[in-house]
Length: 239
Image 1 (cartoon, helix red, strand yellow):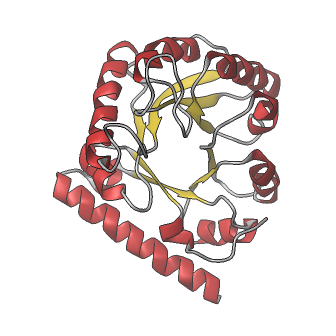
Image 2 (image 1 turned 180 degrees about the vertical axis):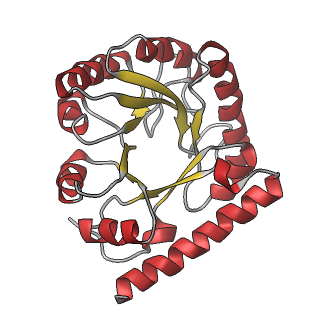
């Protein structure tokens, strides 16, 4: 085993232990939480090593990095998540490799994703990104729609050809009432998820929590956690 593969294996084991412990503390089954490894800024060789170690869900946040990486790993059975703020001029490219776009936060983006998905003859899963620091009608500092805009966007996704409404995503806010209160933020997201599922029962995915706060996300009920640094480490970045 290479040094890098050994390092990744140890990091994955530590993250797995954290998730398992958090699930046990919350009275949840470990199978209820999916680990998504955020491979942004790391090379395709790391993605291949992660695959050898059993990882099947990976995430990227910049199309210019993700597109060539996904192409280099096209022979692997991976599920690709796009988690960054997405500009409409990148949608056609993202629709070619992403299985799920977790950062849907405006109507124009939904229209573009639908057009691209139909053109590519693919179905794209979509999560509505919720900005817990945004006022009505605004977007969050890190992307996302204000909570009162969830329903409208969810209905648009559900009715758009080529798209599938998967659920909700959030990033713990750096400002506002939930700053520094990750558990409370994630619990609020779960409340929104419950309301969403009343109208869209299949939209049961809740993506929340990263390396620093995955325990809080699991405790709140997240179904997916997005972990980068804790798995890949603070090694020199690309570009």
